[in-house]
Image 1 (cartoon, rainbow, N blue to C red):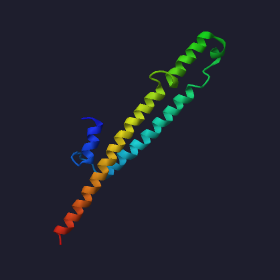
Image 2: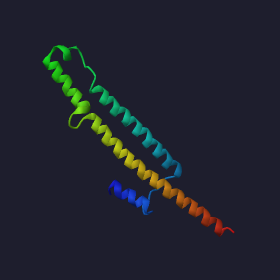
Image 3: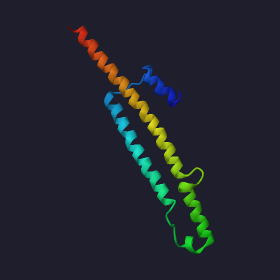
Length: 122
């Protein structure tokens, strides 16, 4: 099942997931922390792409070529580290939105159950 299908199932109330409400909050906080770490890693990769890597870079053609290859891998090239970190961040943001939808449904169900329970005890 795709992440989009899971989110849709959560939104329409058909997703069955056995988690305590506090655990859902912990998962959402963990997503936020991971998103922050991925942003930091992307920024580090972007910084590395502009960083002078050593003496040989200034004096030797082979040093320049090697430094350029590493800089391209860090941020400017195809399949760069910065692009990978951004892609991972987007996936975690999607997972977080799934858990936010689950929490909303969970809280709605809890409120409904509490309301119904109150009606039965009167």
